Amino acid sequence: MGKNLLKGKRGIIFGALDENSIAWITAKIIHQEGGSFVLTNAPIAMRLGKIDELAEMCGSEVIPADATSIPDLENLVSKSMEVLGGKLDFVLHSIGMSPNVRKGKPYGDLNYDWMHKSLDISAMSFHKVMQTCEKLDAMNEWGSIIALTYIAAQRTYPDYSDMAQAKAMLESIARSYGERYGQLKKVRVNTISQSPTMTRAGTGVGGFDAFLDFAKNMSPLGNASAEDCANYIAVMFSDFTRMVTM
Ligand SMILES: NC(=O)c1ccc[n+]([C@@H]2O[C@H](COP(=O)([O-])OP(=O)(O)OC[C@H]3O[C@@H](n4cnc5c(N)ncnc54)[C@H](O)[C@@H]3O)[C@@H](O)[C@H]2O)c1
Image 1 (cartoon, rainbow, N blue to C red):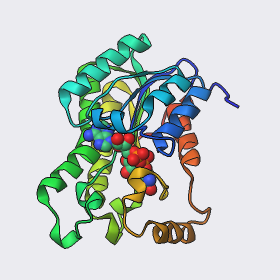
Image 2: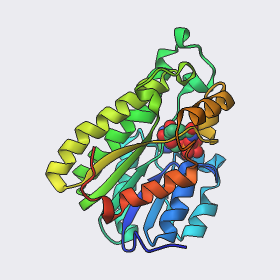
Image 3: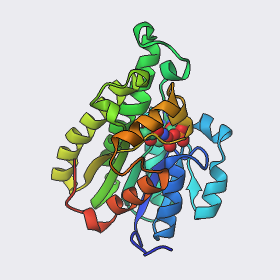
Image 4: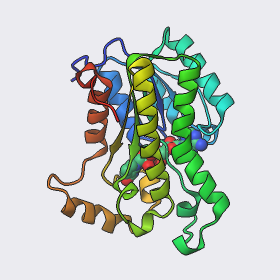
């Protein structure tokens, strides 16, 4: 049952592919909490996924955008403000993909074109989203921007491959842009480090079941589910965390 934590707040949610996606579950919770939003994903994912189902449940519009493409992002951000009737209060970046991981390339035999893709899709896109929002003056003061990360940004996890570098870059971008956007517009920028979760992106990582058990045993409270993560995101988009950044 919602508590109207996000009543009147407007935003964009990237990355809802299917009902297991962290972004999908977060969209449902934000909707329950009274927030309104545009849903977006890469054009190819639109065809594979079922984002329209989610849009119907949440009364949202879907605007496709490849998060690595500036023209797509400009179109997305400006149209979202039109559709939602004003500037944005929140943005969820829930995007990750490594062709090297997907295609099972060993870490000692990476394809560097693919590595570029991993970094662009999973990390640089976060900068592109924020730079586009800044240039279009799309964020309200005290807005909140979140990206999802993983502890492999800071520790060694063999099967996480070049996604570890992508997440390290993502976290670094959050700090650099958080400093800038806070000064400019009091917009806060954070990453949330999620437990391993059974999603399409998650299960691309080799030895995923062992990964789940290892993470569970390491964590005093066990693994956080996608719902736990979504609840945390909702709080981070609310005014209860307005002084939390970077
Ligand atoms: N599942 C896990 O174990 C886990 C753990 C920690 C962090 N995360 C992070 O959570 C986020 C969401 O992943 P998920 O687990 O929900 O998996 P998911 O596969 O459901 O979501 C990943 C999304 O990224 C989108 N995407 C890929 N390329 C894109 C592009 N060029 N432009 C726009 N969107 C693109 C996909 O279409 C998909 O919707 C990712 O950043 C992931 O790294 C996941």
